[in-house]
Length: 165
Image 1 (tube, helix red, strand yellow):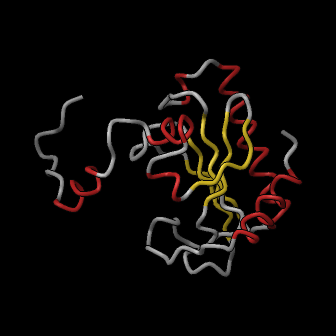
Image 2 (cartoon, rainbow, N blue to C red):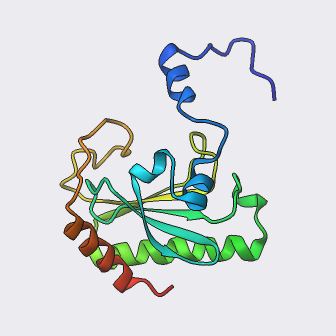
């Protein structure tokens, strides 16, 4: 598809954001050798045949996780139906575990892929005390809530105890 003639050119800020993303898939790199920009934010929690579940280091929303597909694909329709079914079921089981462990008021499910082109789900528990309650988590910057090693371990254990994977 070609760009419509009236479509505006990207701003300098947009070009700066795009420059941060190289052609090597960040999720594939993280799964392959544990390196890259995502290692700063994602801690492996559970590995299955089709997914790796990560605890997000920013626990502003307690229980926040990412469920990434193990194989590289950018669209759900590209997957074998059996793989897609298992991956989506693992994402749902993770959501159920977050709900049981943290009792959020709502769970947000984000599967975007235009910044990091790899199927992955942001599972973001939402709470009415959250200043972004009626907005998306990306609407306004917030100060990340980083935990101690013991707090990360307790958060991970709370989710693992609830998972039936």
